Length: 289
Image (cartoon, one colour):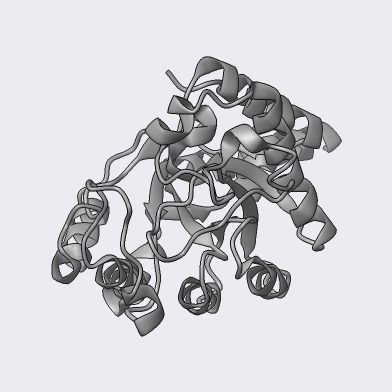
């Protein structure tokens, strides 16, 4: 009888696992949290949905403290460090957490990060200074009381070269953190280039036509179409125009009743990086090709 119950329990757990695996995992990663107040306000609206989400914090930015206090209030969020080595807005700049004199090769003549990866690496940054700064950003977040789960990289600067990518991997191993895109996530980015008024339709189409195959990663940049954000102009010529409208468009799309209804559809399963770390294990991570 005991053996029969054990066998029955095994079959039930196997069926439950298979059913869970049949669902399409959706991972919502919201970037640039702490960049400014308007982004933080938008992030709070998403957190209030109660859905599992991942939010990547920009530690060097002036509104980091507000972001940290907000994030600590929500259990549904997995917090990551948006490793930052660029400052891309003309009128709104930031510099290193570790101090200008500590990492002089990472900053311009005013002590701010460079606006682009090209400008940064054109300055021949010291690898040791990059590690010092990225470590300082992680340490500051921990001192602020944040429970961290993962790392990712603002504008891709921290993984620009094999050497800098190795630094990120070293820090992730040391602090026992995941790394975004190291769990075979599949990027879903069709709506990102849509005009603000078409972002909802684009996101709906992505979800409605989604097929099995890996964890689907939605990287979002949300914010309010506020005077604060509208005043920001990208210093890079390829940067988006009407940035505040684009970010507000992503927020409106994500919070729309049609998207919220789809996200709880039985065919989907919302996950965040804390769940990925626990279910897949940090040892399963591998460098993306």
